[in-house]
Length: 306
Length: 254
Image (tube, rainbow over all chains, first blue to last red; front, side, top):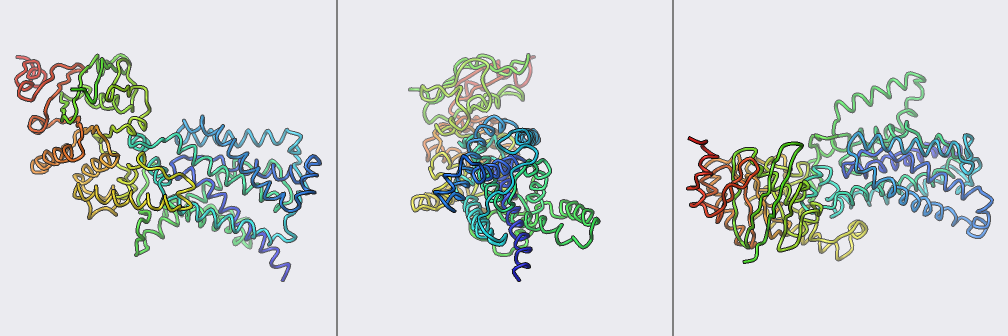
């Protein structure tokens, strides 16, 4: 039983983690900004946790704080991600659409090459033996689970708030939003920072979970995977990345018995989903839901600018 | 009478093309001011310069003696200059109500965290914003369509929603870019009284671009005529109608 839970616990935590990373891409997208920077902030958060957890310099912290060093790592990761997101976001968000996507890919790549070459990040080998927060992998659901719930509540309420409406107005028509009194630069940067902080905290939680951290944690492949999560799940509400992240991260595991052909099936699912579910899973579900909640997001509207 | 909007020697060129050259005029408090002229005369460009969507090449625009030129569009909107667009630019994926709620952004305060935590002040503000949204929709006759997506509204309703959205900003100056475009005769007639009513009710100063000359003549206190980026006439409708330069611009010289 313990073994079963441990194996499946790993998978379950991974699904939650991937859903969270999908959400980190969703927030900028909610304000119309196609940013693929999440893996960069994820890597940054992980390195912060790994460094604070292993470096001798921080030994007194670990000794005096005990397990409280973990929440401290999350806070540090959040703060560092927010700061870096401000530095990167203010110039980068002057770019639009695919140009912003390219700039954020470059950002991820710069961080990756930096971490490959710096001593403090362990170079190509990375950092091993990151202290564990829990004895079993299963236990990590106790940190990722609450983060998922908080993020869902945050995202859901954000959509129905003044700031969330400003995000959506910018996504619909940036110029009209500006002419209607919305400081578009400010809200684009804010959306970018929210996504970055989330990715950074997920990274800081993941380093102890994975026990090791290296430059393979933040790559271009991951950017594309997260984007697929959001597009398949739906980009019009916070539920989209939840569904998309969990389903797509589970798919390779579910298809594991098919051995190598699972990659083909995986690819086919992506292709068919993008053809037949252009609104994503959440958008399609919302279209068929009969009772429209008061103030609910109108769903199922073809998007002109993806 | 102190002018509300003062356009001072404004020029704008696109490459070698002079879209506007040294246009100056002033619009007084509560005036309904028409801007007419053939296509390409620079009317929409002038609106874009006033609202900050485009930088001027020279000159300046002032609102009650304070310079607007150089401010970003959202700052100009905050100061009470709202507009509609010639080619309707609603937030199409948002409901009609949400469109009107978004426009109250500059008049409300809720931040990221108070919005997400739903503090008491924020919830009260949210209720006010929604109530006011419904009121404005009611005013333009769209209360029954509040929950529909803006893109699902009929063309005339979209035009009215754009005006509603601009009103929700609580402007003192309203810029209407061809509000009657695509409307039939009855709708155009309705629009005239609607604009008058709104201007009186909200104490608005209105700048209006319109091609439909009878509507402009009927509605406006004064009219400015642009032709190839130059101001060729300004004055009350009857005077402008009789102006030879205007007749020439519209009908061509003998």
